[in-house]
Every structure is written in C-alpha cells, then in structure tokens.
Length: 410
Image (cartoon, rainbow, N blue to C red; front, side, top):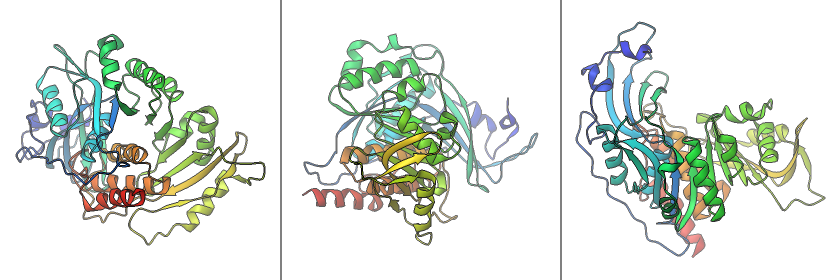
C-alpha cells in the first residue's frame, strides 16, 4: 500500500480507511439538509432541462494534513470528511444545484458505500434511476490527502468491481435516460458503455461534452462524437504532441471537425478556449496562435480578483507545422481566492464543467460562460471535498449571472 497507510489521525485511522461510510458528509457533524433554491423562471431559462451524464461516481475519504507526509512518516489529520465524488457525479450535482434535471448512468455495488453514494445524489436532486447496482462486488472509492500547506490534493482511486459492461444498460433504459435530454456529458470512464450512450445521443441530436482529463481507453472514439471538449492542462499537448497549448488547441479542432470549442483548464491560471468560427471570409486576417495568446495575456488586469475574460476577434489561427483554423481565442481568469479562504481544490474542474454545461444550456455568451464557470469553481474551493462548496442557484455570486441572462432575454 502507498505511504497513505502510515498516516495516522486524531481519530482512528481505521475510520478513514476501513470504516463503512454513513449517510453524512462531515464525519464530525450531522447530515445536512439541502434546500433546492429557486430563482424565477422565464422561457429562456434552462431550469429543469435534462442533462444525462455517464461515467464515474465514487465515495471520497478526505483527510486534510498540515503538510504532505514523507515516506515512512506518521502524521495526524487536521480534519476528515466522507463524501460522494467522481467526475460525473460531481458535475451533475453542480447542475442539480443550479436547477437543472440531471440523470446519471454509472455502476456501483450494493454495499454501504454504494448506498451512501445513491443517498447523497438523490438528496441533491440527481436522478439515479439509471445507475446499475451490482449485488456483489465493491463500489468505487478514493482516498484523498489535502495538503493545507501547498493547497494541493493527492488522490488514490480504487475502481469498483465488477466493471460496467454495455449489456447492463438495456435498450429501453438507454432510451428512457435520453428521453427529452438537452445535453449529454461523459468523463471518459466506462468507455464501452459510454460509447453506446454517446452514439444514441448523436442519433437523437443531443449535444455532447467530453471531459478529457487524460488519455484513456476508448476516449478517442468519444471525442469523435463530441460537440464540446473541456480538458486538463496536460491533455492537449499529450494528445496532439504539439509544443504549446495554443498549437495543441488548433490541432484538436483540426483533428475533430465536429468540435465547436475546446477549453483547457489551468487551475489558478484560469483557462484558454478556442472557438471554431464559420464566419471567416477570404479577407479574415491570419495570425500566429501563440503570438495571439501572448497579446491577450498582456491585456489581462492582474489586479482584479474576480474572474474575467478577454477575447480576440475572429481570425485564421495558424499553428506552425500543424495547420490553420478559423476561430476565436479566449483567455479566462480564475478567481483570486485569499489564502485564508482557499480550503480544497478537489473537484474544482468538475464544478467548472458543470457550470459550462449550464451556461451552454442557458445560451450564455462565451465570455459570460467562462466567468460564470470560474465563479462556480471558486465557490467550490472554499470547502472540503468536491461537493460541499458547490453553490446553489440562489447564491449571490451565481444568481447575478442567471438574473442578468434572464433580464437580457426578456
């Protein structure tokens, strides 16, 4: 077992690593009641829109420590929490709190961890009807060490067993899950099942967003079906072999002709988005994509703590040795969170993706979308775990975006 086995705690270490999790979120507190906050609707409001997600759900065992342990160290945790996790589970929880109607396709076991996963998702309004529950085996779980000194987290994941296979999702269940859906989201896990769901979504003209966290088995097949891609900082260069992120984004749009935009998240450095344009004409200026990014970076106001977004005009974006694509480049900033308020970045990317999906359904402009998503991710980072800090629709930082959109559409 990795070094984590030698870490002790204020409470028994067995509580983290051997206990059967109960239906609560903070191991030193009681189960929270989570009211569904509402903002008045209009015909342009996506509230209650159905979003189908297929991928990972887990139980997270989080331990915060003063500093990450060295090999053979024995240290104490400063706090503990047991909470649901997994990329799709987190993103759909985000969407549920923002007022959408998410349905989740995944697999767990009929064990205490699996039951806790289901209970938490249901409490937040996620439809778990399409989660396969195995009578035998184990549900997936993750040990997470949150370093209070560096504000980083280390995840050690154990996959569920037995793995999900497409036959476990019947045709009738698949059609029922996608019935009325406005959007579909895949995190790259459960690749065989995900491909079946994605292919049916394409047949039904349901837009698809793929979370490209890292190269995975079957991910390339999913990317070919995607309308939108959000990827981690390392993915674009790893997948395309391009020497810079802007060049890699150009390469991705060239290799994936159906993609409308691709976003790369950069943690505290914000994000970069390349949006394909179909409006470019013969007179559209050709510019080097690396030089264009540099010019946008210079315009960033680093004294502003709230998320902002700067965009280029439509241009023919050239990546040396790769090719040219017509598009628009965006640079989004992350919220500058005071160190005293920054607790945990676990699940920040999932919160960002959930907010991006909401923004697409709400038809936000790209600039508003990136600022909105950064606000949601920033709110998440103020609490321990991937879900505790996820904001509700009526949160003042979020409601302002929603109300502004509703007012502009009135």
